[in-house]
Image (cartoon, rainbow, N blue to C red):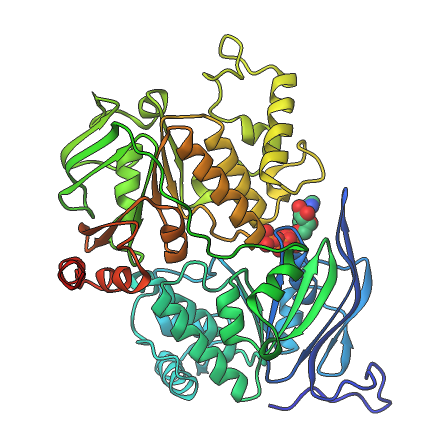
Length: 520
Ligand SMILES: Nc1ncnc2c1ncn2[C@@H]1O[C@H](COP(=O)(O)OP(=O)(O)OP(=O)(O)O)[C@@H](O)[C@H]1O
């Protein structure tokens, strides 16, 4: 691992950069109406795990895009291994030893692990791709870095944690010495996240460098060496992880005290409004549940145990093979998604990009979507003034950071798009809300806002079915908790019973409900 040498005259070599892998000096990047990065300085030492944190829209992704050659800064310099660089594209950044794992992986599902890892940098024999060498290479890299994965597996068949491994192996194959990971644990199970951090720590111990963009305080405290916090495009804190606390980081991020992991008091439940009896789909088996007015029912489970499929079936987006669903007493088992909506079912899907929003439409139009039959509309039409006023209200209520409601939704940062989606669905005031992963990619201050809004929604007498991979979210919000395992509801707990250990065991397939009761 030799850093690139300066040329004979030493041009481009920056003084005082020993032991520094990446240095950004005075990076400024402006978008129309937004100063996304304002003279940002960031120093990342070789061999460290450096967390980059900050509210949604603080400028983290923009800064990483500048570093990785995807965006050109208006001012400032990028220094890699002591040498000033000017990347015109990510391939320049890769050639200088940087590698980025994006939130949506860039892999070919139909190809094998080995083919993906060596893609565009294949070992060749007599001009042909040498697949045997590719397989060997994957095995070597996997062994060297503790990243075991079968070189012959088809990528599309792998769980998300292993697909992420393939991305990392691909970067290592291309010689990346600095890895940038954008919210890498957002879609991982807790066990996969632990495995990822073990890998990152061993890469750092080898002298590689990791830059981690994340909102998760716990993983930053456990897994990083230093933290840089951005707010409104500027650096507001540089912290040594071992010398700081969750509260200090949270205060740096939001500029105020945040109550972390609050457990909300239970609500007062009324009549059942959503009733599910014996529901089955391709991935769900014989589910019985009911959600009452004024109640939040949480569904916990390791990703892939049928939670998403259950909610999709309830939303009318997945075929039901058996069972019966009633909404406020009316049978909706075979109703379309549109009919269910009209009957009072709102839905916040997990995938905000593919199903939830229209990126080219404006923020205001996205917030108005589906409101053609609500008080916003006048004979099925949406008057522009009403759309604007509606957008203004929701932008304020949910703290959606945007230079104007007229910009396209694609200009919003990831977390702000999530706030838009939640805001739009809550504004329907529907008697039943199905919500999946409401705070994925959302900063800690906004998590508090979204949680408060969901509780207020419940207290106004609505029923909420909440699916979340975050146990702290389930415990904080839900009045009752169901755990799904292998497509079934494996256990059901009251708020008091649902401690982290009990839920964790049930999620792993061991229903401890009876033991807990016996011990009481
Ligand atoms: N292409 C663009 N056009 C206009 N504005 C943009 C564009 N990309 C980003 N912005 C704006 O720049 C600011 C910084 O966005 P950025 O995506 O860097 O934030 P972030 O810290 O990564 O947020 P998140 O945590 O939500 O991912 C935001 O106000 C965003 O709306």
